[in-house]
Image (cartoon, rainbow, N blue to C red; front, side, top):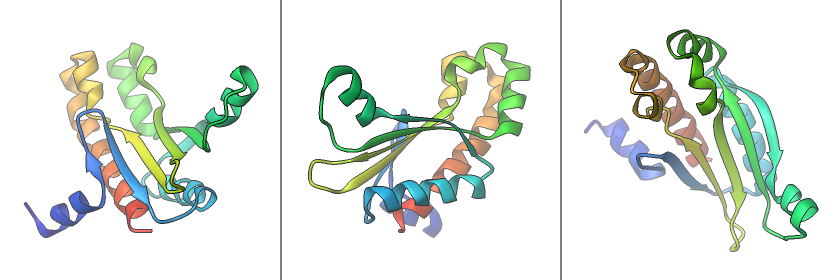
Length: 145
């Protein structure tokens, strides 16, 4: 394992489903950091869900701040769509920013390698690996804040 890979592994957790990190910034700063990091890797925010606000409004449940951003890299989205027209069920790539009960903030982002696993379409593998590398860099940036 390269030194850079080892450093990145120490900053965030990667499992088969998502990447995850607990950051050292407050919720509002973390949201801003995510919004800044995404475009650096070609992603834009398509959707925004105030999950905690929705739970309060619909169910009168109080939970710590939780925001779900639907991120998309349009060139990759188009490439995936051309190979797999039903890819939309997996898009956009959600980024979850949530405040924990102890006041810390965590960020999680879906593992894009799952596009191949979920669809069985091997044509998506090179693209999903490229996106996965971009997500790793985003998570590394966030973890270092």
